[in-house]
Length: 200
Image: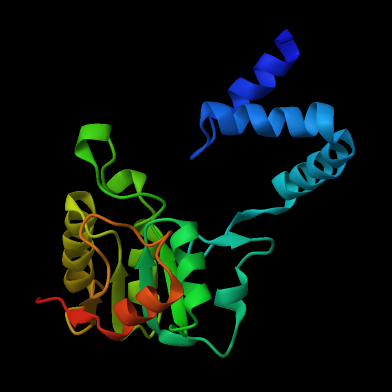
């Protein structure tokens, strides 16, 4: 293979969820088999790089100051669902089981990987707790050790600012150790409907 092809393959391989064979297959598809597809993809990526940003309120994807969910007046501002990553938010939206707003942490506590509270999108959550009429925080993080630790930290943060807020935790229907991104809509719907209160 050529040096240029190898560079493209290595860059693709560095993306999340992309293995050696998948990276090679995509590189071959775009550079050799279907090169006409490459230009529109490059244009879309360049345009998105300029337009897409984090929502100033919740941390999700936005092209203006706030994301479509935050800008939707039909969403319930009293309920905030805290998720780890944007794909988790997208998975919950596909389930059509939740009509509140979201807050994306962009990670979870992981001391072994050097991820502490300072690396998470917590400062804006604290501002929202002080400024918005939030009555419930729904913790929708993975059901593993790091997810549980993050839920505990967020719960303590919420109670320290607004002790009266109800905090609930999804989990019903989610296998132990799993995340939200790859859960099917029916499972997520059950998880949201079966959420339990987190003791204060």
